[in-house]
Length: 336
Image 1 (cartoon, rainbow, N blue to C red):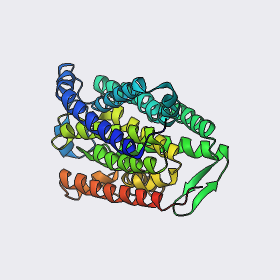
Image 2: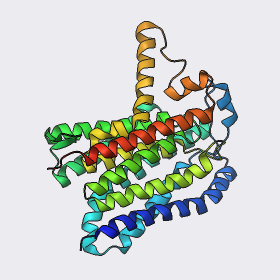
Image 3: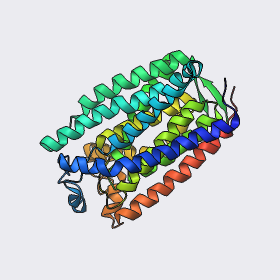
Image 4: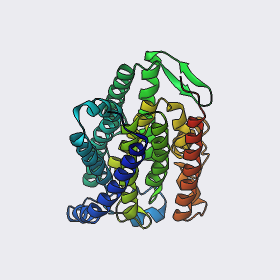
């Protein structure tokens, strides 16, 4: 039995509020557990000196919102009648799977960092990210029969199944690493991710994917609870467990909606952070000169003298404007 209009609104809202409440209730004991286990972040010495004060701050905070989202996902699945599960699984399995699978990779990386002072090598993480991304891309393409992408304000552009899988794989990997690069200041990655997921919550609802809407709403609520403890001065940080998994789940959700081309808009901060690193590395290797004082982008502004809170809040504002713009563009796009 299809959901009526009222349910389409109330279920995501209820899940968002429940995820927020559960995250708040579990957050304090979880932070204490991390402290008891001495799972504290090792801060790179080559970064800004102000960051050294964060040395030893409990990490792996991302497991808080991963756990909350998965618990609610499992509860919703268990409460649904069998016929509704046939819609629930296809719409949510790739974003949920990406959150869990890439979150596992990030958690291992965080533990290695705690134990040895450095994480897993980037190329080794890339192998696992590629496996997860390719599996997710293939599932979405085959289940939904996707052979095109939705171009904002224009409509569908046919690109073929193979091209879609390639674009989807790159999008999941790129967004995963983009959010990870953004995770350098208290509340920065979490806040910008909330606005991006809010945007795709609205887009999923408009596209007629009610259970993807519920998933995105759960992520928003759980990450907001995480931010309650993560805003400056952070009581814990999300670590790679949270940052890598959030990006992978966000890209997966965008792919299910068909609006993968809106992902760079809704996630403009993640794109800017990634581009800043690429430009910095490329410029130094080619010209022997740096473009920014330090990359990723947010550190450049810190070194210009912006307080950490100002950098974070201004990036949040950029993320909010971009998320609203992406949602409006989606609503204005003709759907075949």
